[in-house]
Amino acid sequence: MEFKKIKIESYKDADCSGSPIDKIYAFINPSQYSSKIAMNYKNTETVGSPKATYVFANAGEEKLELGEILVDGTGLVKLKKEVDGYVNTDVDGYIEKFQKVVCGFDGKKHRPPYLKISWGKLISKCVCNAFDVTYTLFNPDGTALRAKIKLGLLINYDFDTKLKEASLSSPDLTHWRTVKAGDTLPLMTYQVYGDSSYYEQIARINDLPHINAIEPGNELYFPPIKN
Image 1 (cartoon, helix red, strand yellow):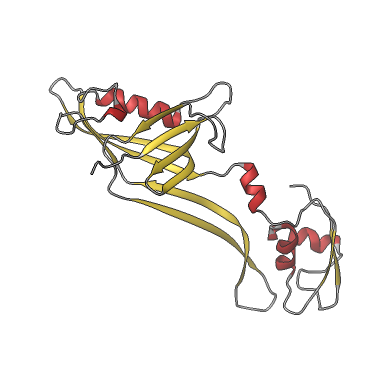
Image 2: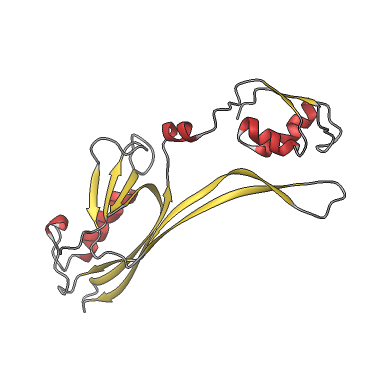
């Protein structure tokens, strides 16, 4: 069975649609990969209480962490057809091509490209925020024979996808809400805007002396807020 190699394609647009600008395959696949998701919460302060109550603020970074991609120029690893254009000893040429695919600056877009990483069931749209190369073996004349590539990849969503997955509640709409038992101002603010960080602004708009000055049955005004 022939082992498939990781394919990295670059695109002009965040949805990675249409034909790629360029592509490259891993010289030698990494031994592992992992994904990480961060969620950001804020602590709601309650006067006189030593306990913490955390409300969701927003989604943080999502990262795809590929293991090291090895590049070998000793001839021990024979290149397949998908990396044609590089002889086994051209480590520097392969790395130059790799860097161009993942970090090449587009003068018209004024940014590096968007990336699509494909390997088996892994299909991830990303941007590259770090490109590290470590050279580990050399010819007597100093040319590289082996190297390791380490990428920093942030998972990226285009705006259309974000809007489809976002809450149907819109900051562009005016809301009146009735306080129910167990409600807090940060929680109600998050339910309306999808972001609890506006709770102090809402307290001022409703002339509340502090954010805990709400009781079941109170009517609160949540106006349009421009981000």
